[in-house]
Image (spheres, helix red, strand yellow):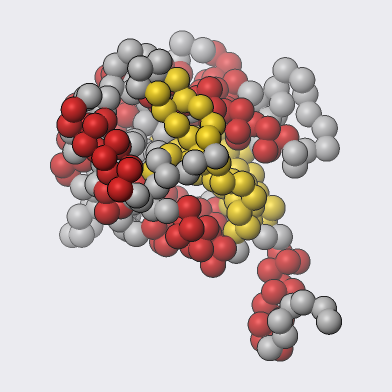
Length: 289
């Protein structure tokens, strides 16, 4: 829901610098116009991004609790202290800020300048976040080479349904993620129900999100997402359904993944990757007899 990604964005900029682009189009101009027009509304809890504000009630604990499972000890007040997190498609910082307040060092990236400017401005109200959060106006692809195996966790919340090449996106995530690191994704399933409720109702009838925000063809099923993750050395730990009640304005966990869902995957360690590669080369199945 945050932005439109395209392949091969060649630059990564701090806010205020001009966009450098190759001859190839890097950002879907129609979607950028949509998010640019709404950039000043990110922190309006009753506005266009109200569902994302409410989603924090689920996604923040989901990320926090799964990361805590990987830590032998943590500070009670700053449970994610020492962890480096990349928030892809951070928008105005709705998820970036609570992760920073949990003690993590968070890098938030988004290709829409106005989103990053809004995020920077809002961050300035909390001195603690100034030291913990860094924002950059860029795509994921633009920062890969300088951040190989840098992050303990990556968050892509309401992002992959805007990606033009999901496999490339996941591959890039894997490259900047440390071995044993976690990838968290929330997105929309590709079903008839998600089209009816996610586009027809949410966009065209109820106006819960701006018209044109989503393209049903870009939605991805948990099965396809899991296949792509595993082919890139990521082991899926959890897939959980999410349901948004437009009348109450709250999200709930659900056993049904036909609409929205959250996924948590862990990157294989170097040792696991080496063993798997050796088994493939030797033609063994990897299952002891």
